[in-house]
Length: 201
Image: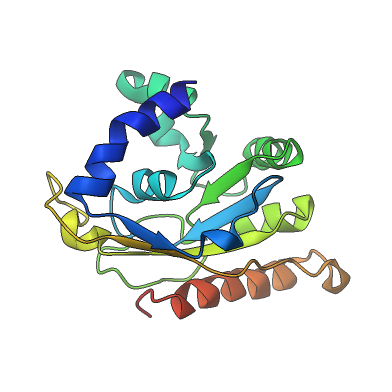
C-alpha cells in the first residue's frame, strides 16, 4: 500500500512536470519475476522507472543511503534492498533472489552508480549474478532526458521531456556456467542492450 501511495504522489510530477512518456511495456511481464536494468545519470532515475512501469519495482540501493536515518523509513517502505558498495554482498543477493522467487520485479543500475556525463561505464557483476542464480528474465531499459532535468550535482529538477524505453528481455545462459568470466560477458550484454535502446555509449 505504501508503494502505491508514493507512486500516486509522484504521478503528476512525473507525467506532467517531467512530461514522462514510455514505450516497450509489452516487454515487461504482466506477472512473475523480472530484473529491470537501466542507465543511471540522474538522482530521479528510480522515481522515473517506478512511474513508467505498471508493476512495482523494488530497487537495489547502496547501504550508505539506506543507513541515513531521516530517509531509511522511505527506503524500507518502498521495499528496497540495501547492498554494500565494497565486494560481494551475499546477503543482499539472497534477498534479491527471494524477491524474484516470489514473483517480484527487481530494479538494478548495473553500472553501480550515477554517470556524471551520461555515458555508460563498465558494469558490475551483481545484476548478472542475480540473473544467473534466479533464472529471471532481464528487461533492459533506457531513460532519456533525466540528466537534462536533474544531472549529478543538480539541486532541483527542471521541466523536461523524459522518455523511458523498455527492450526485449535477456536470459542468462546457464550452459556456459556461472563463473566470473560468464557473468562479465552477460553484464556486457545487458549494457549493450541498454545502449541499443538509445543510451549514450
